[in-house]
Length: 237
Image (cartoon, rainbow, N blue to C red; front, side):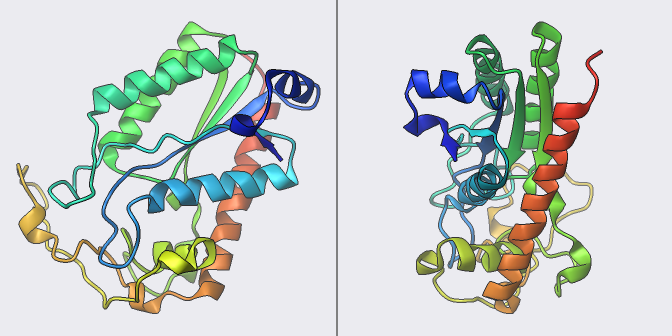
């Protein structure tokens, strides 16, 4: 497994003989209910990337631990950055990967907020316009087959994420709270939604199990492997 942070430059150069593709995990530092740690989004993306690297020759970069967190702002532990900051950071990283010898980057984001994803997409578009670089953007949460999820509309810190954390870091899962779906206005733009969020859960963690977590993790791994096939085989313009 080629973990960039643990390798010397000579080892990385040797690794280029088998791959010039790197996975960049992107997460967030954000509340995840009363039962999950704030790095839940980050560690899910990182662990999927590591498992992919065990099955396929590909580099894994150190993760980006901060993202754009709008719905959970106001909670202790939610440390959000602006869309502009995320876009600038990721664009700089993409250009630096190219300048360091990489030919392709798969951004795997474990956080899926709308502004967060938009910033990542804009950074990717700017990078491919500026360099001869292939970039794929994959949202980890979107790789889960919802037909295998018991909770309709399950989301943040719910059945899916809690099940996965039972596999990744069971020692950090502090109970299985009851379901909670915060009421949110459909159209209204609000300055502060903290008073609507309750315990910070948007789903049903009480339905989480380790067996489900293993299945959800495998779905993500297979989805990333498929995205890598596309990244490596799609013809250059």
